[in-house]
Image (tube, one colour):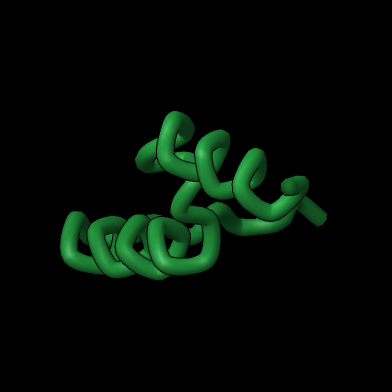
Length: 42
């Protein structure tokens, strides 16, 4: 049996993107996290 693919509405996609942005801010602003990583090392 083939697994059915779930189709998301644009609203659901936006919600998922927002959740990902909260969990992985480096995906949105990679430069900012590089700076904070360097600050942590010091």
